[in-house]
Image (cartoon, rainbow, N blue to C red; front, side):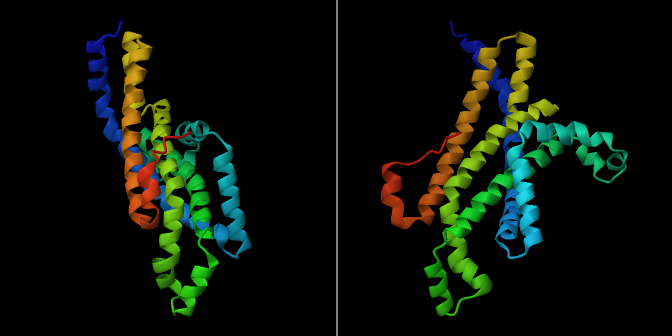
Length: 240
């Protein structure tokens, strides 16, 4: 039998963790996007050392579990005396910043491949036509390459943002109190696993549904020629 009163109490207890979840996701994705662009440019550069470093970075962070990366940062870095003596230690000993660092480094690896794919998808003919019209450098990127690459990469990057929301649940393993952490606290005192995690799942679903809708709105705005298709079958992108 469903205990509506307990479900409501779970919701009231877990809801305060939403700002931490959203803040962790937003900060990780924002800073990770900057690193993703730099990695993508390194991959596309004609400088072999930069390409090699970028490839190695992407290989390591895409090839190892995010949970292990988070454990290495939160528990592993503390064993090095020079890190404990550095100016970064006040941040690296805090679970929020350790979780942010792990999520940011991880999403930068995946995001770099999305950005690189978006840049490679820009038709060469349009670039050559813009150059023939006198565009070059930043103007060419701002008017032609950037908008097309952004439009092509947006659906995949929308998926990455949603994945990052779900990945924030791992932060509870390093003692950060967010949505999953608060659900775990309820379970530790009531032993009612299903209700607590069900409420947490509904909250994650609501967040991701909202984010997917926002991505769809932005994609529709950037793709006026594809609006009939987008309106006919809006893709909410709740995948993986």
